[in-house]
Amino acid sequence: MTTDPEMPEVVPGSPADRLYTAELAAFYEGRPGTVRGLMRVRMSWADVVDYVDDVLADSLVRDRWPGLTATPVPEKFGPGAYTTGKGEIHLPPAPQGPIYLLHEIAHRATMKFVEDEHGPEFCGVYLVLLRRFVGAPAEHLLRRELARRDVRPSDRLVDDHPARRMAA
Ligand SMILES: [Zn+2]
Image (cartoon, rainbow, N blue to C red; front, top):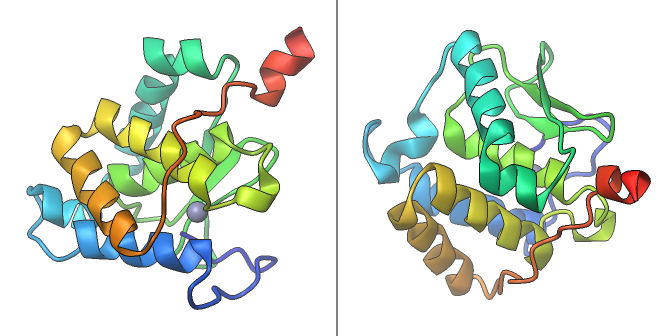
């Protein structure tokens, strides 16, 4: 999500708006402990750090986005989360669960596509991460809500993370 003071307001109908409303429709209506309640989960900061480490250490992630980094940083100034080009993912002090973390990690994996911040490339990567780390039901739920908003996630999967290009 976003509350970066340097980011513009979310424009109705924009890619960000469509993604945020799709996430809420998919994951905010249910109880914690269910797929539909995934955005109501709260994690300790230690669990957040472990979760992000586990995602980055995963074989699929390392193969697809070599050199990908994401450092959780506690954000004092707002309830939302955002990602910076310096590799930090800023999160609220009482951080939300995997949906928020995977969303921010997907930003890290697609940083090159600045103009596509919440567009098809981003959504394609995000869905892959959801399927891998939360499960197929979560992926299908979000995919359906995105389709309802005319979002067609890319299958291309960004695999030329800047770290790979620098190493090449
Ligand atoms: Zn975002």
